[in-house]
Length: 93
Image 1: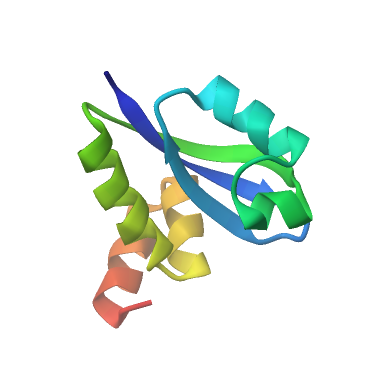
Image 2: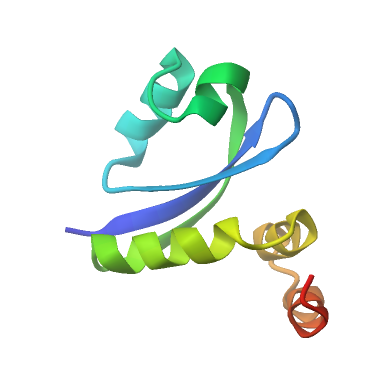
């Protein structure tokens, strides 16, 4: 079963990174205030990014990686700005 990693823009402006095997259900959960504390407290504005993986362990590894990234690096990924993404990776940003 395929899984995906997603990034949401929260109503607060923060970026939320998660993973799921059922995006539609997960987004409905977030909208209803179920699940993660971050989305329960702030609600989300919109889905910004998705990335597909063949299995749950791969998606979870990527989710943890993205959670460690800076906001600038996540935005470069979302925008598809590969040169900026590489520049930030070199700087550790």
